[in-house]
Length: 116
Length: 116
Image 1 (cartoon, one colour):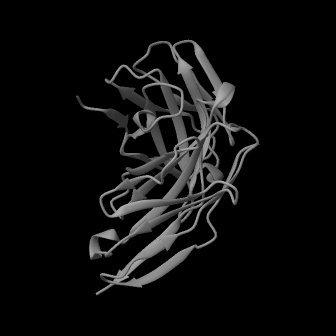
Image 2 (image 1 turned 180 degrees about the vertical axis):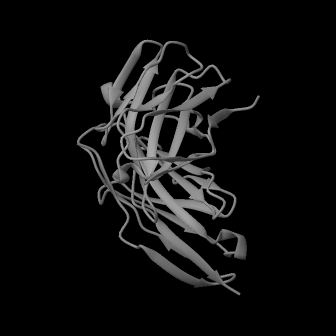
Image 3 (image 1 turned 135 degrees about the vertical axis):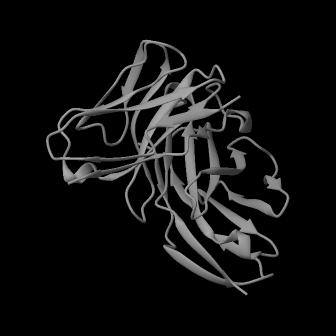
């Protein structure tokens, strides 16, 4: 299993440009998440999904959109990039809901995005 | 609303000493789970340990243990016999039960530095 993969690893955008961050997991997990991590800070939840066709907002959803057409893929869309969106973006997946250590999140390697 | 607080931005500890990283949380849900993750300088997120709100005993995983004080809403991570490789950012995270069981929120993190 490749686990959670993210592309690209690095990207530089100009203000106002758009892009899609790709996330794919091959573990058949129902739950998927997008976080951003600003330098020296913790992770902030942007959006999450409990299954194909179902998404919900997290703590900081403004400026982003998501879709979940398949179990495997959970792309994150930035429509009008702003310098405040400069961050490292992590995608994660989790097998089940409920309260168990077996429901830990598995993280991708991250995408480092800079908006100039 | 759920909330996670880590009050120690940074800590320095001598090698082989034990260290405690603080985490307090706030939730009105009686069912929840608490996670600790390690993030080394390479950037990946590594799952360390989990504690469920109904678990009778404090969780342990090798050199990691969780000092869970439910009444005080604290879930401190204890690392025994610290090693140079323990130098990293450490994040506490919480997942509530019920309808919010799919959402996992992180604290701001503690940067741990181990001195030789």
